[in-house]
Length: 435
Image: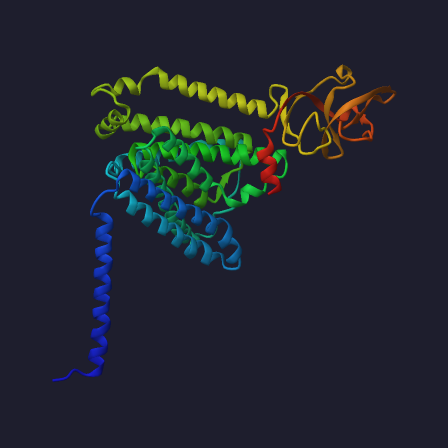
C-alpha cells in the first residue's frame, strides 16, 4: 500500500537530520581522537596556519568589523566576533590534539590559576580603595551580561587555545624562543587595534605604554608560563577572573598610568609565585615541576622554598620601581622625545633628550640646551644670550637649524636642562603617532 504525501514529507527531513547528526558526531569523534600525531615539521606548519588565522581574526575584529558593522554593534560583538574566535578555538584545539607531548588538562592547576587571578583582582580593588573608583565603561545593563559572557567565552577559548598550541608546537625546537615568541605574539593580539594609532604626545605615550602595554605584556608572560606548566586551561582560568571583573563589575579602579604599571607588573609576579607554591603542594604539581625542571625526585620542597627565586623577584621589582621613578622624574631626570628638526644636526627627530628638572636659572649659561614652554608647547632649544632685567633673568634661545631666535624666555618658563641625548630610541613612538 502506497504512503500518502504527508507521510513521505515527514520521513525525508527526518532521514536528512539523522545523516547530519551522524556526520557531526563523526567529526567531533575525529577531533577528540585523531588518527595520529604530527611530526615536528607538521607541527611547525600547523602553527603557521593557526598564527595566520590569528592575524586575520585580529584584523577582522580590530579593524574591519568595527567599520563595516559600526551601525550594528550587537551583530558585531555577539555574532560576528564570536564566530571568528570560536573558529580559532576549534582549529587550534584540532591541532593541539595531534601533539604527541602535550600536557594533559589539569583541573587542579586551572582552579589554582583562577584563584591567582582573583588575587590579582584583589590587588586592583585595594588600589581602587586607595586611589578611588570610577564607573565601568564596559559593564552595562544586567540583560547584556549573558551576551557579554558569551563573547568573552569565545574570545578566551580562541586566544588561549591558540597560545597553548603555538607554544607546545614551538618548544621542541627551542624552549626560550618558543616562550618569548608566544608571549610577544599573544601580547600584540591583546592590544586593542585603536591603541596603535592614538599615541600623539609624551603624556599619552606613558599612559598607553606604561599603563596598558607593560601590564598586558606581563600578563601575557604569566599566561604563557601557565601554558608551559599545564597546557590549555590554566591561562584561561587566570584571564577569566580578570576579564570577568573588568566586564561585569559596575565600578572599576580609577588609576593613573603609574599605578596601573606598578599593579600590572607586580601582580602577575606575585600571582605566579602563589600559583607555583600551591601547585607544588599537590602530587601532580610536584611531578610536573620535576619533569619540566629536571629535579630529582623528592627535591621539589627545596626548590619551592629556595632563596634564589625570592632574590630574583626582589631584583625584578627593584628594576621596575627604578624605571618607573626615572620616567616620572623622581630622580630629577626625565626623558622627552625630540619630535622636530629644529635642533639638527645636534639632535635628530626620534632622539630622546634626558632633562634635569628643577635647575637654578642662575646656573644656566650660553650654549646650554634647555626645555621650556612656549604657551602650551614644549620646546628644546639652545641658549644664545642671557639678560638680567628688573623682572628677572631672561633667555634668548634658538634652534640650531633655525635662522631666527625665539621670543624671550623667562626663568619661570624653563623646565630643565638637557644633560644627555639617546639617539633614535623614540623613533617607534613617532612612527606610531604619524601612522
